[in-house]
Image 1: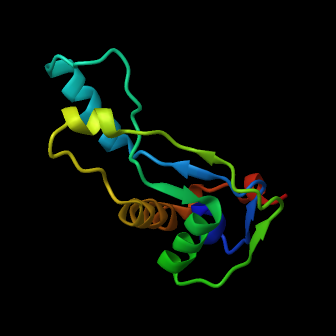
Image 2: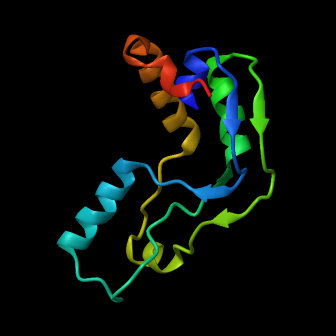
Length: 125
């Protein structure tokens, strides 16, 4: 979606689902914790606990870019793909996940600064 906005194309959403996004830096911190500590359980849901619909993320990207482009939604069913991270958070006392707004801004700005490497043909359909 960031690439499409950089290129001035509308954002197309096939299915407007709700997902829990986890930034790679946060995942690395969780993995480091497991490498350096003895967990109480055998399995955990590693997720941020923050659920976002594709349409809401598309809107955040457009706001970040200060652009007014169309958001085309082919299916508006809001199926949810998330997890419960309460057990993990009990063990990672004081850990806080990155906020999606700041991560979207960083990603959008990177693509905007590197737009010459974006193959527009990959995004026109």
